[in-house]
Image 1 (cartoon, rainbow, N blue to C red):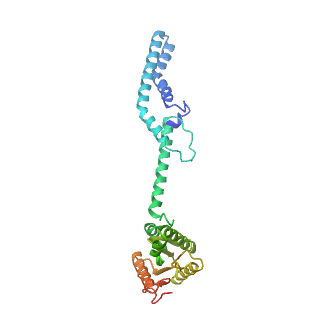
Image 2: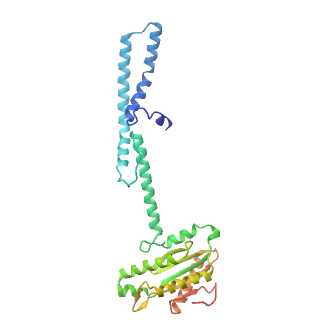
Image 3: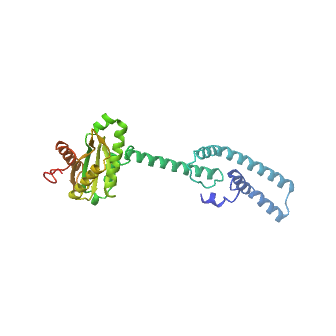
Length: 286
């Protein structure tokens, strides 16, 4: 690489001509030495000099032709890489085939990385609501330092959501899901995590939050749902039920199971309420 860069001033836009120049000089060193020796000793033969010069030029041309033939696949590869659709980003001006190939490889690597990033987002984000999906929710929690993996877990279910789909259609159901996700995301702290757990069920991780704080946050969201409904079905404002569990840093599956049990209690108690996991606080649906 150092030699390539150091010689780039020689025919910067043509690798073949640069190779020819370097080969020409290298192959003529013996001839130059002979001319120098002949001039110094007075034994210089003009016919021999001309013959040797023509022979070295022919040899250099033949070597250059062979090198060019060997470089042809690289040229084709460079052209193929640089023929990719433009992503709108400016690229540096390329010169010879090596520079073109390097630029093409860099471009292909950037495109591949962008595709990988898009796939990662798609794998961890719910496309309908824009919040994390179950996999993304768990992955974000797993990525947290151990000291921050505690707080409260809430599982939330939209009440009588099936009636929305059955009576108003799936388009309205999708709108309600997106609106509800937006309502949750806008009403929690930036440190908290919101996810669509599946179907009409959502999850919130109140990072380092106390149960009372998490319960108040859910109650505040419920009150806003009543003041500013995201929809109605059968004349009833769309509401939600929630189960809340304290998580102290052990296996998250235990906290999720406790929150799910509390959610079941909330549904059985009449819906439109928040229940805390019995292990964390006895009795309590609000």
